[in-house]
Length: 231
Image 1 (cartoon, rainbow, N blue to C red):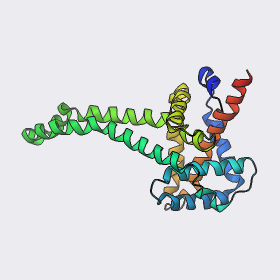
Image 2 (image 1 turned 135 degrees about the horizontal axis):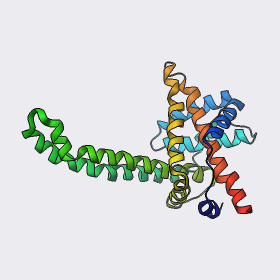
Image 3 (image 1 turned 90 degrees about the vertical axis):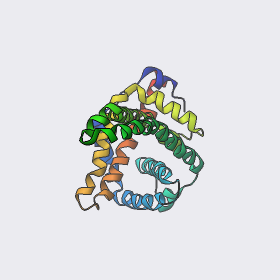
Image 4 (image 1 turned 45 degrees about the horizontal axis):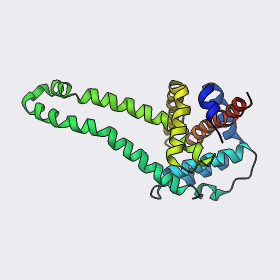
């Protein structure tokens, strides 16, 4: 699918509607989504398969959304394994690179702390670790947003290049950078609310969070993209 018009013209990102429609999608097959969550957890124990499990979950969301039958084994689809294998190392490499400045600043901090005694917090401040840590968090937020559309582009739109999927994701996501960042935080909170009920609630809140994100992917990458191409 071509995303050029979407990238050039931009798009609306309706957080409230995505949350509402995400809950509606979840209610279409509550039992199926809970089973898929359990199987996704199992699949996540297979090396390099945690990202693939989530990508396959989006495929299940699409099937439920379109009224297709869902099989328990759908979560164990290894069609996109190689793509997610490469994506895993891309994410790992990016995190390692982002951590380098923080690690480097530890050296002067340790040296300064030896002579600072009780004033170790001042030494840390002058060492610059605090500044680098804040910058590290900012870069992590930016990188997270840049990855937002990578999984649906790979799993739902069958792009067979991690580099192309990432570049498309970044070009699309930066059009609504702060809205996507806020949305990701909100969905993250919703997904973790199940911890309150002794952790069992996660079987409900995690798939709800994934359904909510799927609705946003569908709206931006398909519905609005189709409209922009007609216009």
